[in-house]
Image 1 (cartoon, rainbow over the protein chains, first blue to last red):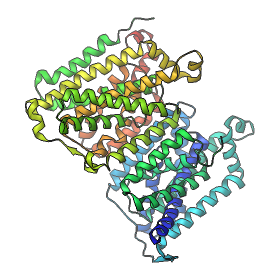
Image 2 (image 1 turned 180 degrees about the horizontal axis):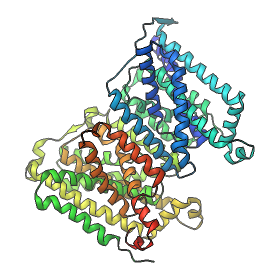
Image 3 (image 1 turned 90 degrees about the vertical axis):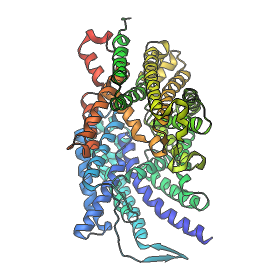
Image 4 (image 1 turned 180 degrees about the vertical axis):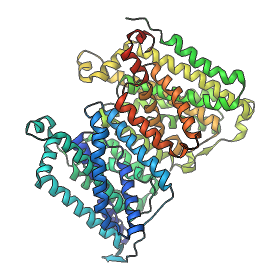
Length: 284
Length: 320
């Protein structure tokens, strides 16, 4: 019982963070209609951003989310205009390969500069007791950070003019253009925000787990599963998908070997795509 | 219909390259050519599902992995002859492709790509956790197995000859699919699947056949690889980067053409060799290949062969 409670609490905490990593992927898929295969690379960049800001400026990860987000946002907007814009509207293969090549470049430069040695950020905070379960304080803060980011994204998408334009472009790009929306600017912003959120997730993950430049790949694959669970293209569905995945992961690992859990996750991914591609909460 | 000359120059080139290490009896060259031929097999078979049919099978390496495992289990544990093991691997991968295809070929575009990635990861984590399949450390071939093939040295040459035969076979199948009614149907599916269905193409069956054909050759290559190297690890056998290599070679050489993947593979092997051995570039080879891929996708999306075909009408009968 104790173990189950602990598993549920950790599952929800991790699930929220996984969900945050997937939100960006879903935002990009919803608006740009492309699968961003460089998502994991930007998660890893976020991790290293947090690491170096902590090492050289003593910034704790929960502060460094802001500079990391801004830098990655700008990189994203530039990348859109340099590369992605040229393949918008072409076949999936081109967009998949463009984002994959961005990932190769980042990971390639990353292995060159940072090597693949594992790093970690040690924050000397105590554990907090919830019911009868001890949870590291960093995880609690990570949870709140993830909730705040999601809430800010909600405010952005539903309460600002640009957010409205983003939703308009994701519904119908041509119609949005007729209404006077400069769709390239909106697409660039969405891409920037999408990978920016990925980087924030990276920062948050770096405060919990050790990481290398290659770690992003794992979370990218998890993000695929989450997005499909929560419904492709729906940013907030990703949060729900993340919570489900987090719960499934930690509760299942009580009963079966940890190694087999990814197998169940990916089978779930394929089955969801086949049976209910619009996600658990989606309507046809 | 114009006359097709592509096989008249493509096969001799491949055979000349394949003969080179045999004539010079140089095993270092043989290793390089072996890799080059395997790239041709991977890329040409990928081309059938991706180039002709337009389905980006991002996790295609799963069939290579399945082939390696089936092969090594048969050869090592059941002492089945190498050639029969290769054929069995093709059969198993083919049946699996038909079963998986029945489900995932209903998906289109990027969703199909994600589903294939998911299948590859699922199979990888399953294999890595089944103890009778060696778990995460994989399987090592018992060295005494090679005795029945005349020692390890002989076995390496047998693997090489097998790869040469497989390469020729793959190119022939790729050519005949392209120039058959099946190929025309596949191209129609690539251009517009709904229209293809309306004009009376059995899209479901055509796609299944294409998926089947593109799955059996990597599986056979998998068995040959496993036989040659004598060990197999799940992380290597199901490495998604190998799928990307297959895609890259196709895009580089010319997607949807017979000669594109072959030329792409030959150049790619040389390029990779150069990048990995060049002292200044070797640490940056991932980044360099990323930049190359980016430039090709943006500026030359139809690849080398496509580029020539667009500019010089004369070469169209030859370059195909």
